[in-house]
Image (cartoon, rainbow, N blue to C red; front, side, top):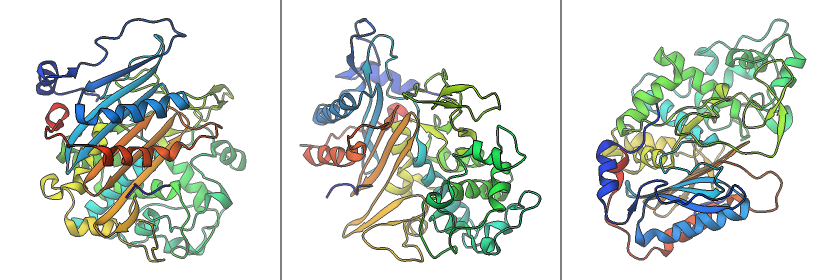
Length: 424
């Protein structure tokens, strides 16, 4: 059954020694001959795993068809990492993608927020059915009044996209910085507080809990709730209490202008736009100033390697060993929302399709310079990350989902070696 549609560190010292000594293991970038900038080459980094070599073919065909220069893939089975690869399709002017390089993960960030909120609920520190306005300040800008239904927006409803905001009707306030400035006395760059104050003075698009409409803004509110409850920052809590127990140390908050951060890929787009990071009116590449990533940590602002993501998923895949969420909490993360389910529904940061053998859970992510995919099904977990997204071609970019599942299904003899100790 296919998946449903829809501080930097490299390998540990122990892992580096294993890479150098292991049979069939290629150290990143070690045997690539220099080429002219206009001569494209295919480069692969990470341990070679013979039974899974067909995954390389899938990634190559997918990337070359879409002119993607950097990609990464990680595959795990029952919590054991079986494959970690970095892919490059480019000339000598394109840096070789290391298998531990981090990418912006866009909306894969949402299940990070959902996990963090569920962990606080499990500890008794947060009631997910508490109104958001009881936990953080939702005071509107002067001269505006809140929608009287705002008190019905609970943390759970915000996580399940039931909060009352429909971006198709009223726009997405995390992607309309210039419009917000034009409507108000606010100036660029907007802060999270600015965005919240602006939206709190506008009417909801529907009564909370009555409809499902995908909302990045709801996740901004959840990240602020988590910061308030923990008395620190959202990032600090996730790093220490969610990622720390499973030894994920590369994952961190992304930056709008991080063009040269060590261990992070460069994001590509054919588009330029007016910067939202200041009032200069300068034209900038869309991935670098076309949106304010610092305001989007709750809904789409993390950077991670593919290996980090499948390791993070051990919270769900092998909960007893991970020691973060209990089975009851995981059931609540994937539970059907109050408006009902169907073939698929949205949990706390995950799309969910119930099956006879459990749940398929997944998410895609997309923003200028980024296309990502993370999925779990029947004991298998895959993460695929790319440094550009569809910008007008007629290809199906989400077909990475069935392509990877077909590769899982085509594997003849799953490898026994666990690569986890190399990277964590």
